[in-house]
Image (cartoon, rainbow, N blue to C red):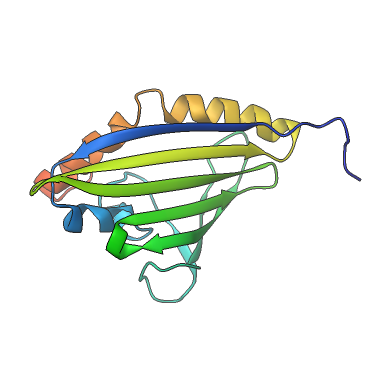
Length: 162
């Protein structure tokens, strides 16, 4: 039964980070498998396809980390490698969110990556979790991503969380 008094909230934030590498080198790092190279603790379980090649329709899960959510289900909803664009839809029982990432060369050796998160609550708890999640995610306007990715691009190693 649907609660007719429930009102879904939609929250969206965007940030652009500057990465020290050519767009052809940087863009693949936003793929499900390649992200392991720079994101401490990132460990997706690929469900489809069995290859690790990023493509539209790829499905994987990751461990949840907010308010008792045990797993996140991810779908690559758009992937335009030639345009350096990827979009993920992530869901739980209480909410879903869309992550849009678009990379553009700002020079031969630098890339601007614009990242937008759009959260939608499916329940009142989902609305509450989303308010917390967007605040936490954009606390530093994704400068933590920028630092981790640039560290990887410079050293080839993951920047470990303190």
